[in-house]
Length: 95
Image (cartoon, rainbow, N blue to C red; front, side, top):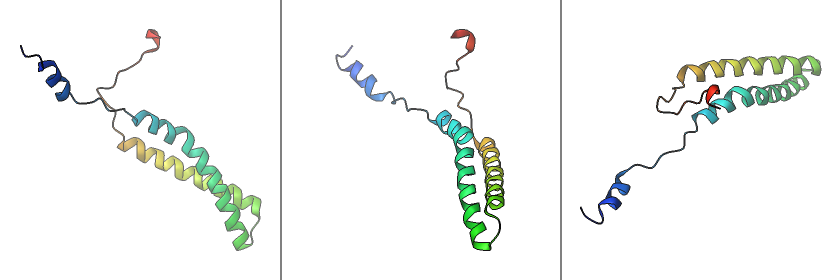
């Protein structure tokens, strides 16, 4: 057995990459719709001023449209998201 053999094994093992899929999924699921509604309300207000319509109604429609678009984008993300099989699963009973 060589002295440097253990060092060679350390070099050959790939580094474990940090998995951010769950963080991204959580952001898209919980934060993105709220941000989209605020942006939709702002854009609805700007659109209402431009066309001369009621600003309150334009805000409401802008928020509803943005929320609907965020739901569509969440469905699209959900279809294309792949679950990592190697990820460690945590069960409530273990906590």
